[in-house]
Length: 267
Length: 71
Image (cartoon, rainbow over all chains, first blue to last red; front, side):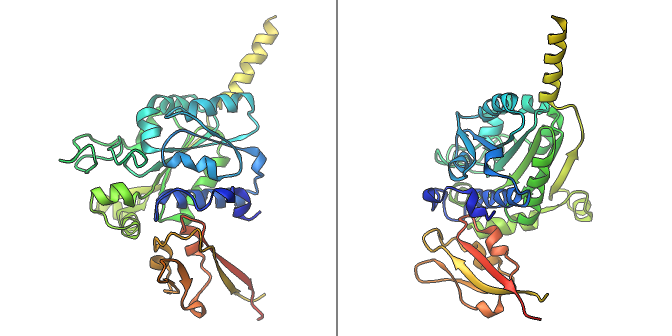
């Protein structure tokens, strides 16, 4: 299948701004699915609210566009009733870690077989550039005109601490790595979290004088490094990318089936 | 089996938003934006079919069509 067979062409050109990283994340995701040879009918995409969540309108899978922060809760319901389907939940940084923060940590704790993609542009783009829990200290936003005093979550550390069994990070610049990581995350049985640094030239870029989409991607190239690299030891400010955690743990739906079996025997 | 050869840069002009990501990151400077800020292959003979433009395009607006080379 070509990747255009996975999209709803009638909704293109999409609504994302010129140079938005979210389009590139979608591009990489479609390539990952194409390389797995997956049929559109075995994929369910559940999204919440925000720029990132618009993706569920553009892909031709089973799609649910749900409420802000609660995509993982809806996805949990779908997965429990149809465990044979592959669940993909793309979220923005605010959707995943502010509004949906609790859903996020508890889905990770349960280790339910869902692939969560956190498209991190460090801002609420759709509503006009408010700061998010991933904006970080010292950044500018419409709601932080004198700079932000909140510190950012580290999505990767948070996901690991909450119990996710696959945790990775990449960027919209490193598309080949991103596609491979997304592929591994989808194949992983358990809760997978992939954080993707994705540029928002319109709000984060403008407010923080980060330049154009191209400049922001150059920054991803220069400010990130593979996990455990020599460069990281020399410059601790570099952001690591790659797969941080990949481990086997009992998956929630399977455990739930065992409970049903046990309960049925009890009668 | 020869090397992959470029057949065509398939560009969906209506989808291109002129962000310039493909132009900037092309390792061979093959691409340019025209006066309407749409991408076109200005030096198609330099294309090495690495497909990075296609992989990075946020708008799915460019595709590299290849064919098998003769030698």
